[in-house]
Image 1 (tube, protein in one colour):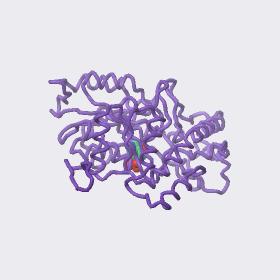
Image 2 (cartoon, rainbow, N blue to C red):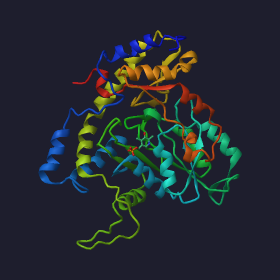
Image 3 (tube, helix red, strand yellow):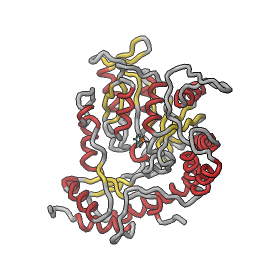
Image 4 (cartoon, rainbow, N blue to C red):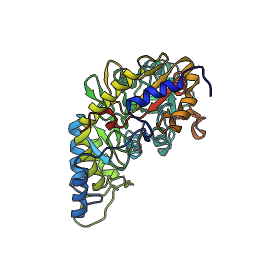
Length: 393
Ligand SMILES: *Cc1c(COP(=O)(O)O)cnc(C)c1O
């Protein structure tokens, strides 16, 4: 064990926030303190457990109201939401799609499902998401706009879309990213899987993309067990999203007619029921997460070299996953911190392995990714469950 920095004291301070003595503290656990039992029981009592039912409509309505996006289409998970959004944006075999290298695998995989190639973009220290200035400079070097489409001068392929992702719930700098995408005729799709409850300049994330996606996986701020949604302000795209995620079935009293190759990506009613109850609790989760942030911040105030990542001034983050940023010698001690905390039942995780380092994506086009590579070495996520904030009833 290296002793160049005082890891034991750091861990003691972090654990004091969650009163973790011997108890196992997970990274993120769901909380079911509201109407979850009642709504799910109603599905079972009435038999409406599957692909149709009132909770799907109700859940979509609640998502629209909450995010301020005109349409929400509930789907089976966040990865499926990304897949369909790329199809609807017109991403085709042989295209390139700009993806942050610092993201969960789903963002890159959805591009592959379309037969397209992810093209990796660096992150900003300020947001942990796509860096708009670096992207602008890079496109200036490698891209050309011809006949209304953006092309990579070196690969000859079309760059059809960009998928910025709001890392750990912290909004990316959307205005300049939107501008760069407009200038280069690149469709913006927001991967807002982690940012339900996060606002950029007072407006909910998911409102900038031509299409945006949410996830309700078990570890997200709100869960349906598994689930996702496609958000869009475009009426026609919303209609198509509903159509092709429900097997492209044409409405008819009894005939099975399908007018294109569709997908069975429907969110079951029983999952939507869970989602309705969870959304009712979202404001409380957000307050609790903010109070947990303040507590971790106080605990770390006397530790030189370890900072808690805080929202940029233009953002109101949902603080989905609390994030330590290590500096100097603490950075060298990252693995020791991960080993010791997990050994002691205080669950921590590093950031994802960067996409361009994974075997299936190592030969994809990429810009200089030095900031993301630095972040990968200094980020640690720490326990963030909503009830740890302490103001839960
Ligand atoms: C969770 C997540 C998704 C979607 O995940 P699903 O498990 O398919 O719902 C997509 N992108 C990011 C960044 C995520 O964190």
